[in-house]
Length: 214
Ligand code: ADP
Image (cartoon, rainbow, N blue to C red; front, side, top):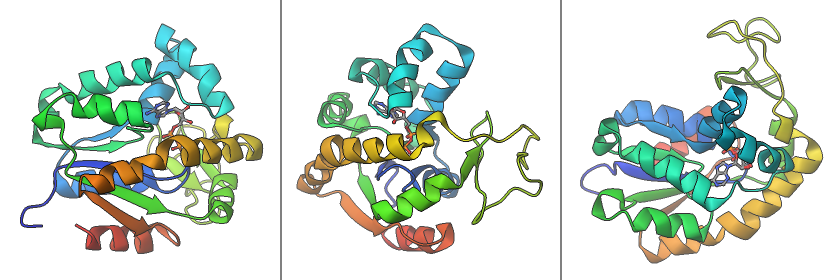
C-alpha cells in the first residue's frame, strides 16, 4: 500500500483485543478512535433514553438495534476531527451497518478492515480476568494488572467487571459475533480491503503482527 490507510474498521470476537489495538493504532496514525461499546456504556452510565434502550440488550450480549447505533456513529463521523480518518471499533457489526456506512459516500469508504482472530478458549480466559473503570480504562488481573489491585492507574476510580463479561453472556456474544459479524469478513474481502491478523498472545505480540499488515 503506497499511503497508509486512514479509514479503518477493526473486527473481532469479544475480548479479541479490538479496543486495545484500536486505541494504539489511532494514536500512531493521528486519527480518532471511535469505540461504539464505550459510547454505549457512557449513555448507560448517564441514564439517557438511548442508554436505557441499550442496556438490556448489552447485558444479554445481544446487539443494540441498528438504527440506534447507526445514528450515533454517523453523527460522530460528521465531526471535524473525523475528516482526517478514523478507527472504528465495534462498528459495523452486521451487514446492515456495513451498508449504512457505505451509503455515506466516498468519505466513509473503508480502506482497511482488520480482522482479529482469537480462539474461544483464549477469549474466555481473557474475559475472566478483565476489569475496567467507569472511564473505560481496561486491565487484566494477571496479564495487565493495575498498580493497586482494584484501582485504575489513570484516574483512581474503582475497577469492576463488565455486566456482560459473565461466562454465559460471553458465549452468547461469541455466537452473535459468528452469526452477524463474521459474514463481514467476506463482505470486506470482496472489496479488497480485508487483512486478517492473528490476535492471540500478549497485546505486544498481536500489535506487532497487526502493524506488519499496514
Ligand atoms: P465486545 O466487542 O467485547 O463485545 P463492545 O464494548 O464493543 O465489546 O460491545 C459491547 C456491547 O455493546 C455489545 O455486546 C452490543 O450489545 C453493544 N454494541 C457495541 N457495538 C455495537 C454495534 N455496532 N451494534 C449493535 N450493538 C453494539
